[in-house]
Length: 399
Image (tube, rainbow, N blue to C red; front, side, top):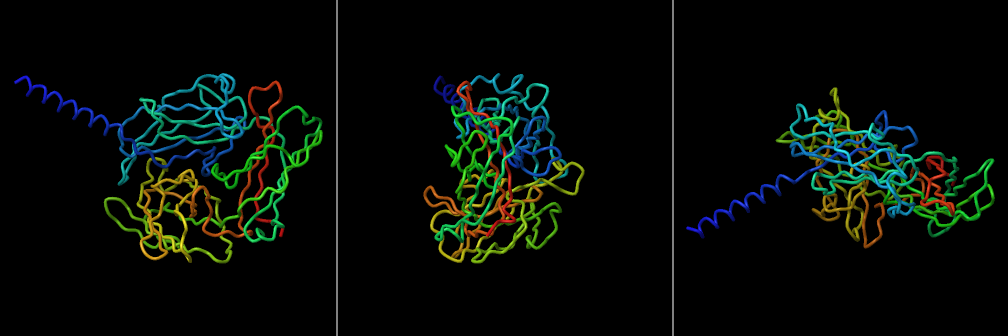
């Protein structure tokens, strides 16, 4: 009898633990950080600018989520400073604004919050991570962004590289910062960080300027692999076909089948948005009335791909994990299916071979957006601060 009771107790304990584990499973999608008004994903925020954070949890169960911000150096190492040195107020705040989806096949709960808010505001420029956690302190997701306070506007010149073996695939940048009525301190440290298309996985860091004077810093011969233009589709009207959408199938969820994407051998100009995505629909509330569909991608390669093929963009934070990996279903044809919320999506395919990540095609003519941040650390400073900012599009690249 005692053994029987012990067995029953153990059985109830196992069931409880399993149920508790299952209840903690959170499926978070459509993570978006944007400005006001919302115009797609955004990574740079200036003083007094409002950051809108939005995401869905697909189990449609009520969860307690909390968020914090952390300050990082120019090379994304955690700054060894106190929190009150970079924010006013306090974080680790519960997200209290959430709504259930309305009239959608895929049920979800939409969570949102703004920074700054009545609890805190960011006070110091630099690199930041926004970290969302659950009530057990598990990280649900994290996103990088840059906050800029006072800064000097820099200049970016973009040209075709003059190196013969790279001339067809690379773009060359020259970035300069001029200091009017001030000086660049000889004892201060200056670092330059350059991003391509708002992608923190595609950046370069420069420890020293090519030329430094009392009122000017120049960083020259900065080479970026030009890549190719982004593909795109729009499911604002989830039942409509288009030049990108072949057909839409009904079921327990919608299925959106895209036309095949083919690897290019010659450059073709295709106006894109350089990787952004924007949730959108024909309803009144885009966050709670936008439904999900299973989007089917297909890529046809003109040659054997050495490495793993992934689909990336702002919608998945350019992350290379199994969820976004394509499988070869027939000779040189790769496919995958992703659950995506209604809206506009820019995406591209990249190949990861060991530690190298490259687009499937590269053309020097490709239109890219470059963003540069100049960091300074004076002898008396405890952390690096952004004092310079520059942004340039390569649409009118110099041949």
